[in-house]
Structures are given as C-alpha cells and as structure tokens.
Length: 116
Image 1 (cartoon, one colour):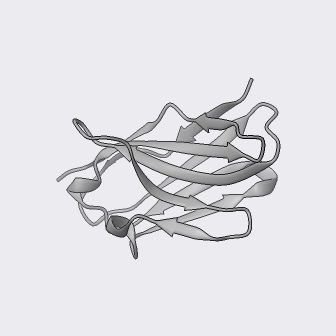
Image 2: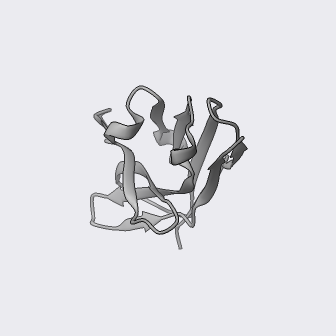
Image 3: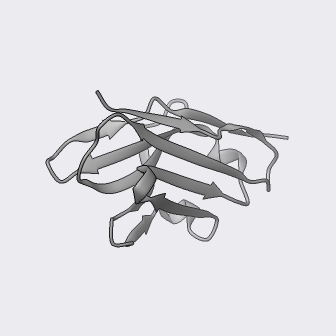
C-alpha cells in the first residue's frame, strides 16, 4: 500500500519561508506528475504547483515568483520551497502523485499558518 507523507508545515511570520517535503512510502511505480495543492478553510482545494518527469512546471498565478517546486525521482519525493509567505497562503497543503497507469495518490496534508 502506498502512502504519501508530508512534512515541513508550521507557523511562520509574513515574509518568511518554509520548505515542504512529500515522500512516497511503499511500492509506487511510473510516477508522472508530482504536485502540491492547498485548501484553506471554507474554500475548495486548488492547485499550487505541478511538475512533470521532464521538468515542465505549472504554477498557480498567486505563487509565481514566490514558490518553487522540485522533485527527486530517485527518492520519490517532491518539495515545495515557499518564500515571501503571505497570510492568504494559510492552508492545508496536500501533495499529489499521478502515475502513468492512472493511479492518483494524495497525502493527508500539512498545515501552513502565516501569521504575525
């Protein structure tokens, strides 16, 4: 059974930085896209950033220039470097892996709170 385990969330002041990590535990094969989504209280889950195996990146407009997604294929791990954080970035961040066989895996989420 495959699980995605996120880490790195927490409380940070506006303008600060955090680095999220998400690692797959278990036998997972043929990963295509790795990505991060977030869900703020009372809002729907939305895409933050996604990265293909060949390095194509899609960023939501609200994080362009502030967040950077990267992946380590050998470790089945995806990262999200978040800089210049704003209070409106407060949300639960979930990682997502999609495989070439159509499997879709989600992490349980890590809470990011941006507040002074």
